[in-house]
Length: 408
Image (tube, rainbow, N blue to C red; front, top):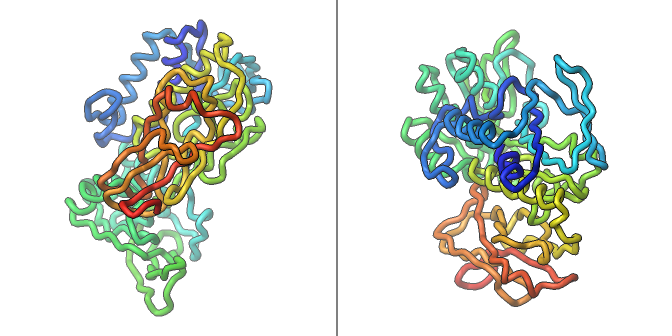
């Protein structure tokens, strides 16, 4: 919706949203906790409130919507094949396409948890929908594997609904969710967090009866003799999100292995001309505000592409340096830049009193000081347009983490 509104406001005459659900908003309607829109709206909104704001903007902007519509294929020439119950098979030829499919959850079978296959094993998003939308409790005594934000939020939600939450078990030595969620969802509700632990077996016939949990070593392998049985009737998995990119791959778009999403430039344009991407389909962001910002960038970029205002691509590569795990966008064409470029990155390890530095060779073109950085929390560095004008073909922009002693 952010992308559609931005494209419409940038002069595109006709903008169409294809949505496979019965309403707009994606996952937001089931996210009834607050914390959405603190940057974009300057308020702390719930997910449904945040979605309603964008639905109103979408309607006011004159954006068209087709609901209950599933896209089957996107061609390299920006042709779209879709289907819905009322119109059947649809063929649409677009001047520009913006990918906004979001992400999906990893399941039990993607992380290979051994054991039987009883009822009672859910992803955190499925539990969220059951409780917040459908009005059902998944069980009475729950174990949560993984400390992603949805898992942390659902730990609190389940406890508020009277479910006994035995604990959150995380294989890594640090939580994978935002610090505020660790504090507000676990610590404030006395829900135990077991770091460097994982589930090594699920037990039960018709219904989950319990799990075996084990400590893990530095290589994330279970330590023999550390296992213990934990009785429960529900297992909630919060073990990571994957950008939803089957359509992107079919269209021949280059995928960045570090993010799991399409490689994009400062306009959020993918490797296929005229196909843009935004939000969690590009990279799983920690804040919905970043999703909206990338949507706005993609919408403006698509409008410039349609009106012929985008110069040809002659990109400079954006690479990760010491201490940085991933960065978006991965390319910048200086001649195309008319506004401040936001670089989103995640660090490899937690640190304090660091500086995120963006360099062109030895020249620092942008930087940001952070009192604390953690792998789950994204850091944004803004590059002013004038700092990019002197960068020429063949040069490389590198993002790195510096401590007082130099690069990490």
